[in-house]
Length: 344
Image (cartoon, rainbow, N blue to C red):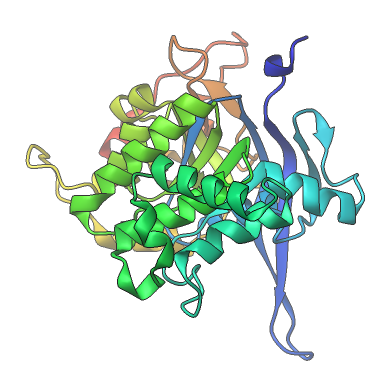
């Protein structure tokens, strides 16, 4: 087996539970409910879903900013959670970098741009000596399409798109093999988003970097990603090739997300009440919050994964596609109730 046969990142049963409230009314809230995810070398995977679905929590767990409650995840075949914390902190965070949503909030306003690039280069030993350091910073600025003169500027002197490019350059400073991009374009003007998306795609292709691209923008997910995974209430409900999934959505929640995208050709009105109700519901450990869409086809059992098209990478976690008992391995077509539901 070659190194590229092994996924750069692989998680199995990853869970995260938070405890909230005071001493008299402590409550446990599940943010992740057993996540299985594989990201291949050089692959861009888009993780889509509404706010509160667990996307950022997953990214923070993968970046080791949060400690998972259960499960395992491997980085290039090595069990990250089994390694010592001190060793993993330096080596793992050099290989896995995170780009945050707000470029201004992630850059300290009292430092110049050059400081943000020099610090990771110095901490991880990527450059030594003043001349080598200056050359490394200038190369990073060139990679993200910014002039070297901006190294002497402060964050407030840059536009939103320029600040996000600085954040990308900072992530590239330690030659990462995986980038976790948490909605990197949501705080930017529409006119500059395409430039940042093109930059991330070019960097991944030229340097072989893998990326987990977290977004609620289905258009940017289709434009940038090779594969899309849909997340609802801390669990994956559908995944597959980006073009195939958006052209042929199968899960009721995926259809609900697509229904929120403005479309002049849509014949049925968007139902905000149904969308709000689904957002409030959380998947129970032994039932599906969407079972009401086709009560005769669904059961109280937790839905499992099924392939729903000729392309093997397109799967859905939904009881509507459970194979009949007399013909294991085949998939059912969605019921008429699903087509008539507000999620369709």
